[in-house]
Image (cartoon, rainbow, N blue to C red; front, side, top):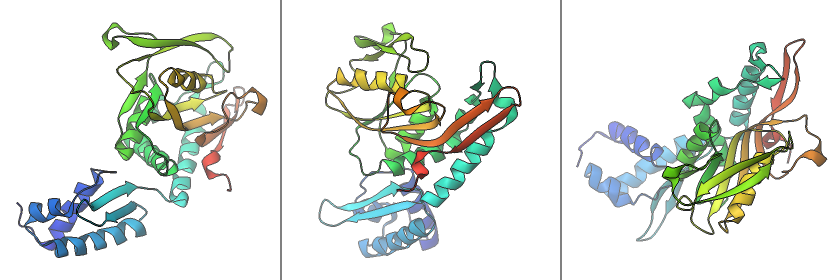
Length: 276
């Protein structure tokens, strides 16, 4: 039990909630932790709730009853998310990102925890109304984004392998066709990694025609699992609609064109920001 002044208690309670998103915390947890009356804890939570809402940090849900408590739901307002998207677009448009073949270098951005955490919070907001059991991605570059999203939703992360590993045990493997190159690839998932009938949020760092994500969708069918949503950090806008294998997804940025000669890159906010 900690005896703290109210100002210090508010700070610690806020930190406690932020580190436990989507977790129902009984009021008795705080009352016992600080040796305070439930009425005082309730007053503190009202203050924290107001700040969370005013600052766009998220929602603080209070559930009444013996089994009730308080739950922090991370959310990012659309206007704040658009600021993030515009900054992401600016970084992606740096001329030195162009690689041979017109590819775009993104690994440095995917390695920034603060940037991934913001993207993960946007995905947590976009899919907050969905009933999700796990977050899934394919190795390797989408892993930081998947873990950031999983952290914001307080969900485990499942990794799909491109090659089966002995340490994964028994696995399900499928062949899928790359939407951009029309070549055949293999992906696998350990049978222990995913429970049957799970609801899965798929996230990935980049999507061209959607072949890899469609492969994950087909792989989930082998587990009798359901796709709860698909989120991609950057999508290619150069793919014709009829060539795209996936149409129901959320993107945060759209790569519209890359000119290797002039070193110009054109990126705009993704479909998450399209008018409803």
